[in-house]
Every structure is written in C-alpha cells, then in structure tokens.
Amino acid sequence: MLVMYATNAKIKGWWNEVNLIIWGASSKLAGNDLQVQAAISEMISHGVHVEACKKCSDNFGVSETLVNLGIDVRYMGEPFTNYLKSGEKVLTI
Image 1: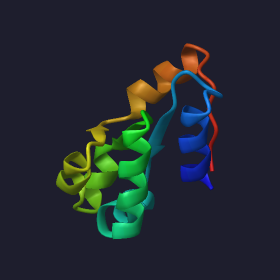
Image 2 (image 1 turned 120 degrees about the vertical axis):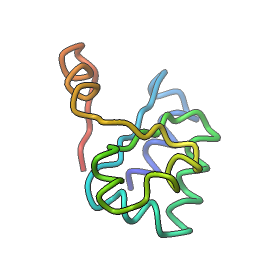
Image 3 (image 1 turned 90 degrees about the horizontal axis):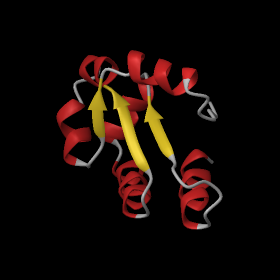
Image 4 (image 1 turned 90 degrees about the vertical axis):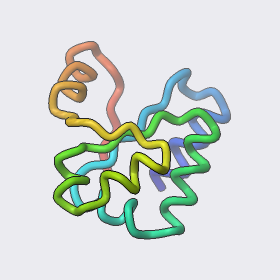
C-alpha cells in the first residue's frame, strides 16, 4: 500500500515532494527481497526520494545493498526530527 501511494502521489502530483523512509525490520526486507527492491527502484525512477535509517540497515547487514539501490542511507533521528519541526506532513504505516 505504501509503495503504491508514494508512487502515485508523485506521478499524479498530489504532493510536490514525496519521501519514503525505511525503518527497522523493513530494512531487512528491502535489502533481501528482489520484488521489494524492484518496487523501490520504480519509486525512485518516478522521483520519490527514498531514505533508510543507517543504524537499522547496519543492524540487518543491508546498508550497502540499499545504497546500491539508490537509497539515501543515513542516521535518521535528526533528519526526521527536522521534518517534524518544519511542519512536514508525515504518514506512518
């Protein structure tokens, strides 16, 4: 559902910018599942900015794989806090 919404939100112009953050065990799934990787690549090709928590992806040993997919892998505590403080809209699932 999240991949479909993020991709369509960007393609259809519902939002000017769409960022998707990969957290926790989702990092493991994204780093190991080829179908999920294809969906991420599609989102990125449509202009969705995909980020992942470096601590989470390091914990699951998938940081390098995520970087190679074009995902912005970084420690997300401060950036996410800045998103919230700046009034960015946040959808969590």
